[in-house]
Length: 213
Image (cartoon, rainbow, N blue to C red; front, side, top):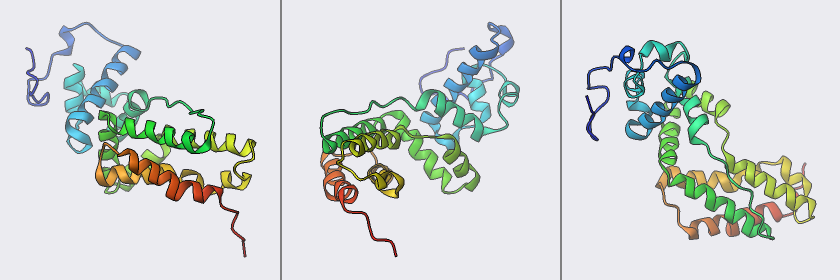
């Protein structure tokens, strides 16, 4: 049976996985994780079920539970395998344009289906504390790591003071960009990116260290 483009995989009769080529190990795991990400894009975390994933991957639900204890762990593995792609560290010759370029890369990723998936997961995390904890432990966004590398280079050149790297100021730009995305969605305007950098981030990381009482 061929599914129509608008068909609900869970509404169709479950495929008899015994009639297809038997897949094992990494091949089967790859198919399951790919199906999981596709379900997240189409149905969101709230609408995704283990049954739907099994149907899309053309396997049994038991095959999923042998590998993952539940839906949250399966989703985290799918995000880590397919969702988080690498970002390049900008090297434009200036701190300002390096930070702007890093935020542009993040904004571009937010325009992809993966951006929509992450927005949905963060919304669910607000309702499920245990799921929120799993996201914090397992998902490591590339954006903050790239910004930190840019700042480390600025510290080496003497443009930024070393104490900044140990402060919360490091992630302010990426935090503001993420909040913009969560509140207003994508695409994020170029003007918003430059405002974050020029009006907030650069004044914050280039200012003298605060006096501690």
